[in-house]
Length: 163
Image (tube, rainbow, N blue to C red):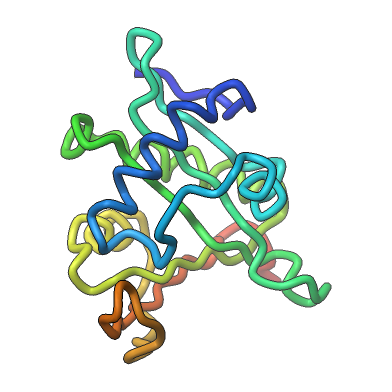
């Protein structure tokens, strides 16, 4: 498996993997894949990575800003999605390692994630990668008419933003 920067030409496969995540009902509040232009505007230009094996994209990871306010310039939200036939193979770990390295090189001091409680594989991945549970937002939003909780996780860089 190799990792490389995500390119616009990857959108077809990246969006298909995103759609698989949406279909689970516990990966995102999104109910449909946005057009590439909307997704591109919502995510940072740096810190986008895909995992590839035999020219097939297995998964992807990207960061999005948490706020437009300058004080949050070093804080980003994590998205990691693994294709349904590539789960449980260490793809998420490799993507997360790359995302952490790239985020620190770009000056980010905090990565955060909001995870549905039933997404146990994502919770385990985040905990293995040094994220800590910081709280729960109960009934924060509805998905298909069902109230959903969201667990908040964060990872503070040991290199960036340390005095």
